[in-house]
Length: 486
RNA sequence: GCUGCUAUAGUGUAGUCCGGCCAAUCAUGUCGGCCUUUCACGCCGACGACUGGGGUUCGAAUCCCCAUAGCAGCACCA
Image (cartoon, rainbow, N blue to C red; front, side, top):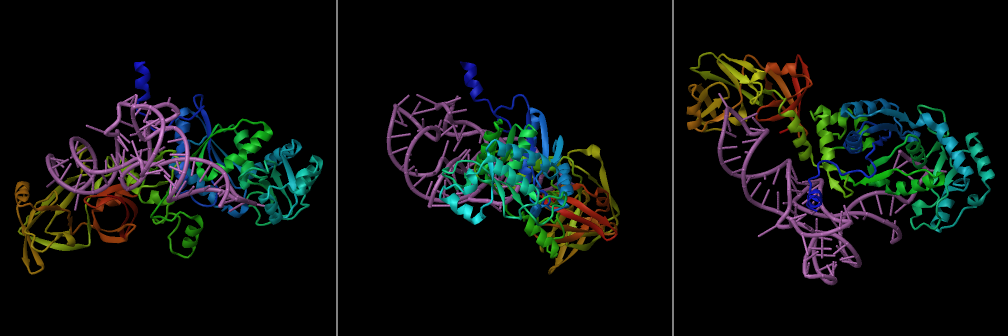
């Protein structure tokens, strides 16, 4: 009794249990190859991935390219790259356009079972009938007739829109979306970039066929598919197949970035965006460019979970996940934005040793040679300030002539600086700096950073008192960095 | 309009199935403090929610009804 009570209050960690998953799962991530993956895709990808890792099993990447209108030939590779970046435990890849014969064969079987029929009605007319729960004439034609028409579809006997295969459902179903929905259609144009075909399965058919054939046990997808799940059940029932377990998570609102593939593509074409990794976009490659780690994305998505309510995605939460990963590893450097040169009178040469990481002295330090003139951030020199301390160096006294400061050596004592409540600020030796441009979503900051930053290309470092940044490019003209987060 | 789903702090989330352990968990955020040669990290503290109204019950975040709000679908897209 006691144990039963305590079990009930045991703290759950991570995702909720999946029904029937104890013996392992087969799950899938099924993107449409129309462009690079974005944060929205990452949710489905990460959730399925986490469950496969939790229960063990197979994780199928299924490229759903049965609509040539929505296929971008370049996206096959893009999607694979994005998945590799995310680090999903994909165990196999299938592409639906490779499997058209499989779908054709199953379609024939379904017609033979009476679960589908070929409809040659005008689409508008069918819609009208459907609204009134009335069968179209094709519905009652003999199986042989449907089979014959099906063969004619495959043999180019019909043009686009002239014939389709419909699943026999329930014409009295209260939801018109359920009534005899289509399973195959003819498409004359555009040609498919990977196969020659003109009869294509609709998503509801190919998904059921593949989920069954590949042995998918659990499906986690957005609630925009709830109606599809109900439609698909008719197909399962016609075939007598077992239905997988479904979970539908709610809509996720994402603010601050562009997610629409068509909008992104248009912006790239007209030069508004620099590419698919422009940091104003919500693509995974844009996140990567900004220094967000794939683990952070996955962790954030798992924290969001599979709730069926609509939620708003929180950048704060993603940044917090990222900071947990990045803070222990990011080296620290000085970056002085909008700098001004300052000659420090009365100071002898000094060498500053600044730790690469404040909580890990073993990692070593940077060496900054002071020889008389430094770069300081103009904004930090507030008129009236009597003393500042240059971090890891020494104190500087400031005398003001109106708004014009002059600087002089103020001793090495940290205690003095504390007593004077002097701010500890960043600085750079004027003779050894690299120009640095820091790009943020709000705008660009120009300044200078330590030369050693050049060795951090591709890494996330922390510009002290500014935030974490990704070193994006290093060249003769300096360093370009993207702001990650505070 | 029709069909269906949902509603816990600024955000995300636990608890809801099987009513009492919930004056509601954890994270994030904001504010304050400690630590610190970063406004980072870490530590301490504060703030902040059961959509509203009825009902059932000794007892409701949890069950029922109504209202309200939001969302999804109603494609020869996925």
